[in-house]
Image (tube, rainbow, N blue to C red; front, side, top):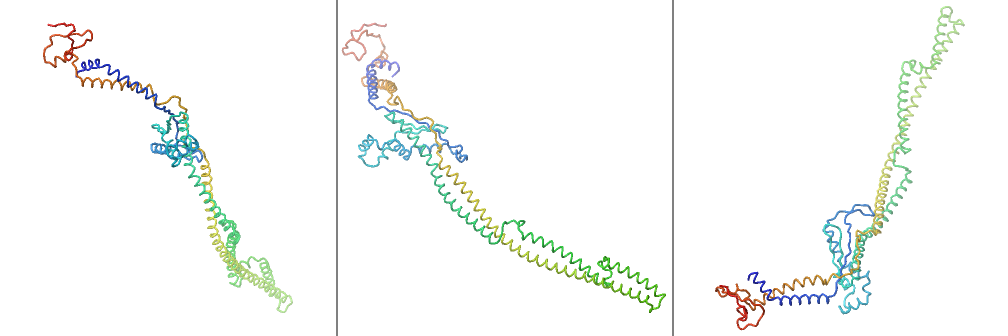
Length: 471
């Protein structure tokens, strides 16, 4: 079948096409008017899946947008959110809802579960491509209820998102409160133990330079060094005093009295030597001069002996002093060593107290932070646009349905016209007749107006038509 033949057929069967088109449009308009109206509205949400926590100030970890958004979509369409919406809207107490529930389920089951299923059928969540925005789309026959459901899902999702965020923090806050209480008890116990130990052993600080006993030990060490030097010097003087009659010792040489006696003895001896040359032994002057020399020599020897004995006694005293200082130093050393051992034990107690203090401070800081975060009402979800009550329904769209019915009716009419032609095939053009009979054409008969045919309708002309012959 060629395209010109198809056009001839369609022109001949135009009534079928028009009737089919009219019926299609009529049925579509009627059905569109009869079908219940469906309204549609949407709530837009912004998800802050990466940013800074408003309480702690910490940078939140960056999450994969695809997985995060898919999780949030599943969370919005979860039964928990639907149950919250039903409770927030008070649908379980609505008489119409109760009547519909009893009619549908005969009163069996939970009305909250029934409402949750019904609400989930009304909403659809669509994430925006390459952004952190979500749209909660609500559909239904009541425009006001549709807007309320869409906004109700947004609010319930905000509440659930905040609950998911703060519930672990509240549990952690309770845990940290118990730990802080225990750590406070440990800190008080360690401090009491340290205080009792300090009072028992008389310790003020663990620093050595603040200890009186250590300072005394240092002082005794200095005294011992000094006593040892003095004892050594005294021993040397004593040794010199014992040699050569002790006349050449530094103490004797440095004694002014002995030096004066030596001078007086020298003068007396000189006078006696002069008198011994001129006088006899029995002469009174001789006797007197000799007595004076003996007296001065005896006094000189006595002073030298006394000086040497004093030097020896001083050496013994200094050596005894050295021994006493050494004994005191040994005793003080033992005392300081014992004090150091005590101080080492105190150092352990101080470290235990410091560790307990640091653990308590860290736990208390974490408790304060978790309590603040647990009381935060800052959600990661922000409602950008609330769902408005729709004015026009989205379905049925009479204009769109009518346009589609015209297209579908035209196509159906064309198909029916072709089928009708194929079921009752007729010759519409001279070319078809020439091809069918396989004979040359002598002429054509042009029909000016439709007339009844008598047995020759299959040839495509009427016997009453005007003839025009072509040679």
